[in-house]
Image (cartoon, rainbow, N blue to C red; front, side, top):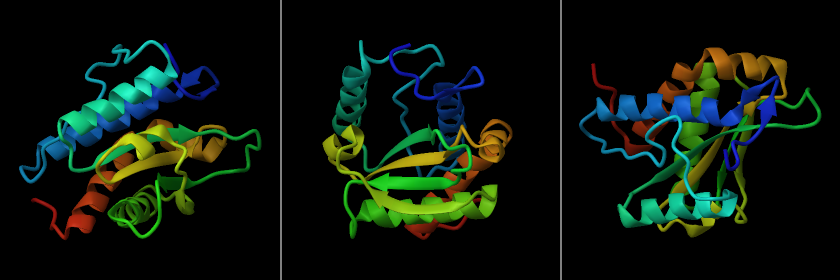
Length: 177
């Protein structure tokens, strides 16, 4: 493991991220309006030799595909266990990425029932800074908050579905039956 993110009660963030990402990819693949690629294609796949090279590989892959949109899925952590909720990061406001982020966040809040912490900018995040397409970094919830952690463990399919519904709303698509 290069950098699997937060670890709370022996639960590694990377496994939640991977599961939600694969579930989302499966949903998107079942909808012929989308073509999807993932940076990790198996649970044991390791990208790069450290955190920096892993992030660079992800951004470079997306730029080379070329992807139209980039969605990075994560979980948050905080020393204060009372901090909770979902947020989505973008490189800057007033962009397509911000509009996409807002649709995704709205659906996560609505479908999963988690607190809305808003769309935020963070131009220092590598995958937001180095991708050439609209990119969002979704923080699904706080692993350090007991209620959020329960949702992150038990509602992974709901998170994936919420991101999908946010994409549909962003593009003005109706769900397939």
